[in-house]
Length: 421
Image (cartoon, rainbow, N blue to C red):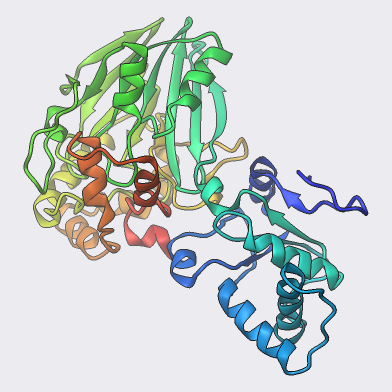
């Protein structure tokens, strides 16, 4: 399990892929997160099952721990880093004796893995089984996972998941040709996947102008020399009302794009954005982007016109409900790891979602009831989403640090009922 080994052979670090395995399994971990409270509130580790977690900022631990040492608590350090570890030990003895489990692995977490390593060292000195998330939450935020499924007609679907953000994207392949749907910012994952599976990417598609994450669509298409497709309504920033400066080929309702022996058909479903598109693959799978999710439906207010777009959203979802019940829905986001199926895929048939998805059930109650439900379920509006849309329209060019900061935290594209604790 470890990247580094202590002298005793006890694991001291946990890798990102190992963490993903624990979270998928429902988790046998107890998390001590020492980031600042606002960072913890924005996003945290989530599991398919229970994941007990405590959050105490590192500076608070050190400040009180040092005071305890000065006031006579046991001190065995030789100065410097050793004293820091001893201050954490003093804090843990006072506050965590009846909190931390002795029958679970304790995972310590901070932004970049440095301060949490000191916390893990302190806890191990007290006899706990403690490991550190070596690369920290910053690296977890950029971690990608891939799951795949093969349809009866031989079409391969690779679901590319960025679990910390709850963002999903897709590589869909037939006879060696592939399209990429909603690629995320780190485009090397898609080129590497294509190379590993002997695929030639022929088109890059975005379901809409994204607000929660920086699209990799334009960059990926440019690198590969292939078309990038977007509905023209989303090539205008909805708040600035400025045209995009990116190169794209316009999509229209009913348009069919072929690759290998497969076809995706564009279905225009305005509501989340004015240019929102669902891509229907071989009349069997619907890549719903930001329209239908597993537990919810998309919010209509990220363009600043929630009351105007909510009725559009109702009519679009009403149209999607006319798809066959056995259509497999593959969304652009998830709100909880528990939404994955036994294969680790975020996918359900439309018929299944009609039984469990509150937003879709509200559609069946009519436009007035749905709009009232929609507008009454809006989560907070993240201010950074305005700039992310500017980036995706080519109106801003952030450096890597700024891009990472804009994307910090999980997406908030679904209605608030999907985020209930």
